Length: 249
Image (cartoon, rainbow, N blue to C red; front, side, top):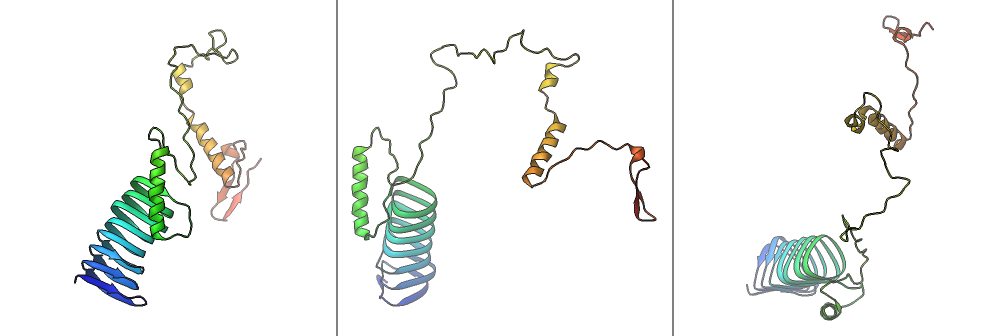
Protein backbone atom coordinates (compact mmCIF):
# COMPACT_ATOMS: atom_id res chain seq x y z
CA UNK A 1 0.00 0.00 0.00
CA UNK A 2 1.27 3.43 -0.90
CA UNK A 3 -1.08 5.58 1.21
CA UNK A 4 -3.25 4.69 4.19
CA UNK A 5 -5.85 7.23 5.32
CA UNK A 6 -7.71 7.11 8.63
CA UNK A 7 -10.73 9.46 8.44
CA UNK A 8 -11.76 11.72 11.29
CA UNK A 9 -14.08 10.15 13.84
CA UNK A 10 -13.00 6.56 13.05
CA UNK A 11 -10.82 4.19 15.07
CA UNK A 12 -8.85 1.56 13.16
CA UNK A 13 -6.87 -1.30 14.73
CA UNK A 14 -4.05 -3.29 13.12
CA UNK A 15 -1.51 -5.78 14.35
CA UNK A 16 1.21 -4.03 12.32
CA UNK A 17 1.22 -1.57 9.45
CA UNK A 18 3.84 -0.79 6.80
CA UNK A 19 3.13 1.75 4.09
CA UNK A 20 4.70 4.60 2.19
CA UNK A 21 2.48 7.45 3.43
CA UNK A 22 0.21 7.37 6.47
CA UNK A 23 -2.42 10.05 7.12
CA UNK A 24 -4.16 9.84 10.49
CA UNK A 25 -7.09 12.16 11.06
CA UNK A 26 -8.93 9.83 13.42
CA UNK A 27 -7.37 7.21 15.71
CA UNK A 28 -5.01 4.41 14.70
CA UNK A 29 -4.02 1.63 17.09
CA UNK A 30 -1.51 -1.12 16.30
CA UNK A 31 -0.22 -3.94 18.44
CA UNK A 32 3.34 -4.19 17.16
CA UNK A 33 4.39 -1.16 15.14
CA UNK A 34 4.03 1.27 12.25
CA UNK A 35 6.64 1.82 9.54
CA UNK A 36 6.27 4.49 6.84
CA UNK A 37 8.14 7.23 5.07
CA UNK A 38 5.82 10.00 6.27
CA UNK A 39 3.21 10.05 9.03
CA UNK A 40 0.98 13.11 9.06
CA UNK A 41 -2.45 14.21 10.24
CA UNK A 42 -4.30 15.73 13.13
CA UNK A 43 -5.30 12.47 14.82
CA UNK A 44 -3.97 10.08 17.43
CA UNK A 45 -1.49 7.27 16.85
CA UNK A 46 -1.08 4.56 19.50
CA UNK A 47 1.38 1.83 18.60
CA UNK A 48 4.23 -0.32 19.83
CA UNK A 49 7.04 1.17 17.73
CA UNK A 50 6.98 4.03 15.22
CA UNK A 51 9.53 4.30 12.42
CA UNK A 52 9.36 7.03 9.77
CA UNK A 53 11.39 9.75 8.11
CA UNK A 54 9.01 12.59 8.98
CA UNK A 55 6.33 12.52 11.66
CA UNK A 56 3.80 15.35 11.97
CA UNK A 57 0.92 14.37 14.25
CA UNK A 58 -1.36 15.83 16.85
CA UNK A 59 -0.77 13.12 19.47
CA UNK A 60 1.66 10.20 19.53
CA UNK A 61 1.69 7.42 22.12
CA UNK A 62 4.19 4.69 21.35
CA UNK A 63 6.80 2.42 22.88
CA UNK A 64 9.69 3.90 20.87
CA UNK A 65 10.11 6.45 18.06
CA UNK A 66 12.74 6.32 15.30
CA UNK A 67 12.59 9.20 12.82
CA UNK A 68 14.50 12.01 11.18
CA UNK A 69 12.18 14.89 12.10
CA UNK A 70 9.33 14.94 14.61
CA UNK A 71 6.65 17.59 15.01
CA UNK A 72 3.74 16.94 17.36
CA UNK A 73 1.57 18.51 20.02
CA UNK A 74 1.79 15.73 22.61
CA UNK A 75 4.24 12.83 22.70
CA UNK A 76 4.42 10.02 25.25
CA UNK A 77 7.12 7.41 24.70
CA UNK A 78 9.90 5.76 26.71
CA UNK A 79 12.49 6.28 23.92
CA UNK A 80 12.69 9.02 21.31
CA UNK A 81 15.36 9.04 18.59
CA UNK A 82 15.23 11.88 16.06
CA UNK A 83 18.38 12.41 14.02
CA UNK A 84 17.61 15.99 12.90
CA UNK A 85 15.12 17.61 15.25
CA UNK A 86 12.20 16.98 17.58
CA UNK A 87 9.60 19.68 18.28
CA UNK A 88 6.76 19.19 20.76
CA UNK A 89 4.51 22.22 21.20
CA UNK A 90 2.44 21.06 24.19
CA UNK A 91 3.84 18.23 26.34
CA UNK A 92 6.63 15.66 26.03
CA UNK A 93 6.95 12.65 28.33
CA UNK A 94 9.95 10.40 27.68
CA UNK A 95 12.57 8.49 29.61
CA UNK A 96 15.35 8.97 27.04
CA UNK A 97 15.59 11.50 24.22
CA UNK A 98 18.38 11.64 21.64
CA UNK A 99 18.19 14.23 18.86
CA UNK A 100 20.12 17.00 17.21
CA UNK A 101 17.77 19.82 18.26
CA UNK A 102 15.01 19.55 20.85
CA UNK A 103 12.26 22.16 21.23
CA UNK A 104 9.69 21.69 23.99
CA UNK A 105 7.26 23.77 26.03
CA UNK A 106 6.47 21.41 28.93
CA UNK A 107 8.44 18.20 29.31
CA UNK A 108 9.01 15.35 31.73
CA UNK A 109 12.21 13.57 30.71
CA UNK A 110 14.83 11.56 32.57
CA UNK A 111 17.78 11.86 30.19
CA UNK A 112 18.27 14.11 27.15
CA UNK A 113 21.15 13.87 24.69
CA UNK A 114 20.93 16.75 22.20
CA UNK A 115 23.20 19.31 20.59
CA UNK A 116 20.70 22.11 21.25
CA UNK A 117 17.72 22.30 23.61
CA UNK A 118 15.20 25.15 23.44
CA UNK A 119 12.52 25.61 26.10
CA UNK A 120 9.54 27.74 25.14
CA UNK A 121 7.04 29.34 27.47
CA UNK A 122 3.85 27.28 27.82
CA UNK A 123 1.37 29.11 25.59
CA UNK A 124 -1.39 28.10 23.25
CA UNK A 125 0.28 28.00 19.85
CA UNK A 126 0.14 25.87 16.74
CA UNK A 127 2.87 23.56 15.51
CA UNK A 128 3.92 25.92 12.71
CA UNK A 129 4.18 28.80 15.17
CA UNK A 130 6.29 26.59 17.41
CA UNK A 131 8.66 25.83 14.54
CA UNK A 132 8.98 29.53 13.65
CA UNK A 133 9.55 30.57 17.26
CA UNK A 134 12.13 27.83 17.72
CA UNK A 135 14.08 29.01 14.65
CA UNK A 136 14.00 32.62 15.83
CA UNK A 137 15.10 31.66 19.34
CA UNK A 138 17.97 29.56 17.99
CA UNK A 139 19.08 32.41 15.70
CA UNK A 140 18.91 34.95 18.52
CA UNK A 141 20.92 32.77 20.89
CA UNK A 142 23.57 32.31 18.21
CA UNK A 143 23.93 36.10 17.90
CA UNK A 144 23.86 37.07 21.57
CA UNK A 145 25.81 34.20 23.15
CA UNK A 146 29.40 35.11 23.99
CA UNK A 147 32.37 32.78 23.74
CA UNK A 148 30.06 29.90 22.96
CA UNK A 149 28.63 29.91 26.50
CA UNK A 150 24.91 29.22 26.40
CA UNK A 151 22.79 30.04 29.44
CA UNK A 152 19.38 28.45 30.04
CA UNK A 153 16.55 30.71 28.92
CA UNK A 154 13.11 30.64 30.52
CA UNK A 155 14.27 27.92 32.91
CA UNK A 156 15.22 27.82 36.60
CA UNK A 157 18.90 27.14 37.11
CA UNK A 158 21.70 27.80 39.59
CA UNK A 159 25.27 28.56 38.42
CA UNK A 160 28.01 26.35 39.83
CA UNK A 161 30.24 27.86 42.49
CA UNK A 162 33.88 28.47 41.69
CA UNK A 163 36.24 25.83 43.07
CA UNK A 164 39.02 27.32 45.24
CA UNK A 165 42.51 26.60 44.09
CA UNK A 166 44.41 23.93 45.98
CA UNK A 167 47.53 26.07 46.36
CA UNK A 168 48.34 29.75 45.99
CA UNK A 169 49.98 30.30 42.60
CA UNK A 170 51.69 33.51 43.72
CA UNK A 171 53.81 31.68 46.31
CA UNK A 172 52.68 33.90 49.21
CA UNK A 173 52.86 32.47 52.69
CA UNK A 174 49.36 32.01 54.16
CA UNK A 175 48.52 33.87 57.34
CA UNK A 176 48.56 31.90 60.57
CA UNK A 177 46.22 32.68 63.44
CA UNK A 178 48.11 33.13 66.64
CA UNK A 179 45.35 31.53 68.71
CA UNK A 180 45.40 28.30 66.73
CA UNK A 181 49.13 28.17 65.98
CA UNK A 182 50.95 25.09 67.27
CA UNK A 183 54.45 25.38 68.69
CA UNK A 184 56.61 22.86 70.49
CA UNK A 185 55.99 24.75 73.74
CA UNK A 186 52.20 24.89 73.41
CA UNK A 187 51.63 21.35 72.15
CA UNK A 188 50.67 18.96 74.90
CA UNK A 189 53.08 16.14 75.54
CA UNK A 190 51.76 12.60 75.04
CA UNK A 191 51.15 10.55 78.15
CA UNK A 192 53.68 8.03 79.29
CA UNK A 193 53.47 4.78 77.40
CA UNK A 194 51.27 6.28 74.67
CA UNK A 195 52.58 6.61 71.13
CA UNK A 196 51.38 9.05 68.45
CA UNK A 197 50.10 6.11 66.42
CA UNK A 198 47.86 5.08 69.31
CA UNK A 199 46.39 8.59 69.52
CA UNK A 200 45.32 8.47 65.88
CA UNK A 201 43.57 5.10 66.20
CA UNK A 202 39.78 5.52 66.40
CA UNK A 203 37.90 4.29 69.44
CA UNK A 204 35.54 1.68 67.99
CA UNK A 205 33.63 1.23 71.25
CA UNK A 206 33.01 4.98 71.57
CA UNK A 207 31.87 5.23 67.96
CA UNK A 208 29.47 2.32 68.52
CA UNK A 209 27.90 3.99 71.55
CA UNK A 210 27.59 7.31 69.71
CA UNK A 211 25.96 5.55 66.76
CA UNK A 212 23.43 3.81 69.03
CA UNK A 213 22.63 7.11 70.74
CA UNK A 214 22.03 8.90 67.42
CA UNK A 215 19.89 6.05 66.11
CA UNK A 216 17.77 5.99 69.27
CA UNK A 217 17.36 9.78 69.26
CA UNK A 218 16.14 9.79 65.66
CA UNK A 219 13.57 7.10 66.58
CA UNK A 220 12.26 9.08 69.56
CA UNK A 221 14.11 7.17 72.30
CA UNK A 222 17.09 7.85 74.50
CA UNK A 223 19.79 5.81 76.19
CA UNK A 224 20.40 5.73 79.94
CA UNK A 225 23.66 4.48 81.39
CA UNK A 226 23.37 2.66 84.74
CA UNK A 227 26.13 1.17 86.91
CA UNK A 228 26.92 -2.45 86.28
CA UNK A 229 25.45 -5.04 88.66
CA UNK A 230 27.90 -7.49 90.30
CA UNK A 231 27.40 -11.01 89.14
CA UNK A 232 26.80 -12.32 92.65
CA UNK A 233 23.96 -9.80 93.21
CA UNK A 234 22.35 -10.24 89.78
CA UNK A 235 18.72 -11.46 89.64
CA UNK A 236 18.24 -15.17 88.89
CA UNK A 237 15.40 -16.76 86.91
CA UNK A 238 13.85 -19.85 88.52
CA UNK A 239 12.78 -22.17 85.73
CA UNK A 240 10.72 -24.49 88.01
CA UNK A 241 8.65 -21.70 89.57
CA UNK A 242 8.80 -19.54 86.39
CA UNK A 243 9.71 -16.37 88.26
CA UNK A 244 12.63 -14.04 88.78
CA UNK A 245 14.38 -14.14 92.16
CA UNK A 246 15.51 -10.62 93.08
CA UNK A 247 19.04 -10.05 94.43
CA UNK A 248 19.65 -10.42 98.11
CA UNK A 249 21.02 -6.86 98.54
